[in-house]
Length: 68
Image 1 (cartoon, rainbow, N blue to C red):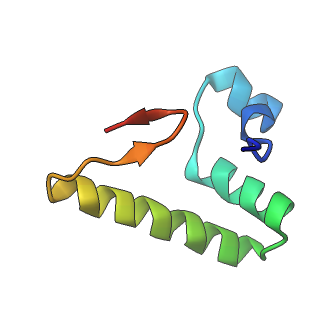
Image 2: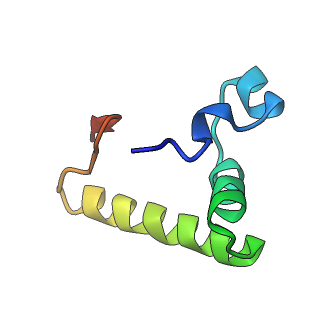
């Protein structure tokens, strides 16, 4: 599966070593063509579902990244 450019976000994200919600939303915007608002909303929904699952004691697995 392609990394959608996340590994090559921008120099600022690489310099401080932190991948933010805004960085993820920007990748969604650029690669999928959603509006910036739609992209940010999509990222927030995904993170919400991940956090909700974790809070209920379920595992969250991101293939190629890890299991939490």
